Image 1 (tube, rainbow, N blue to C red):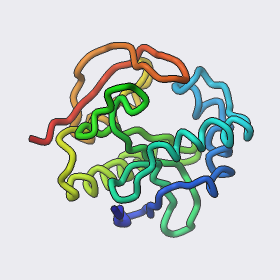
Image 2 (image 1 turned 90 degrees about the horizontal axis):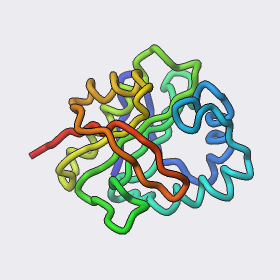
Image 3 (image 1 turned 120 degrees about the vertical axis):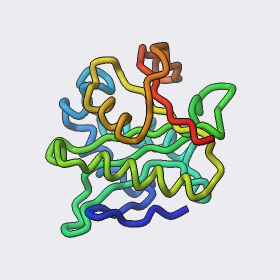
Length: 179
């Protein structure tokens, strides 16, 4: 799958070769605030935990992975958009329900980049035709993510526990049904 350039942004799937970019992004406590309470990632964590997880769900044909987002005019890396089946790390992944997520560098906040990027990725996935719904989760304090979810056409579904091998967390679920 390919995600076409948007008005201001360019996209490509991230790989282990992007470890330094992932480290830079996760090395800002403000970026990590709604991920893990503001704890920054070490390069060891990126290479030993983060990259293997990324590789476990990346599927270029399906469009799953972390879509690297760069600014077209400058080629500056500003963040990523996540695509993977909901509940991927469980015994019952939902292959027709794709989770969308995003993480962007603080310097890019407030400029509409995350919404523009998530819309471009969502639209490319819809054109593929294999997805019936999109979901997203966020901690209840993360109002900026809820704003993006709403702009993507998602609506609130429930509050609940999101189970993950790295730790469970209480989140709000949003969803967009396509059919």
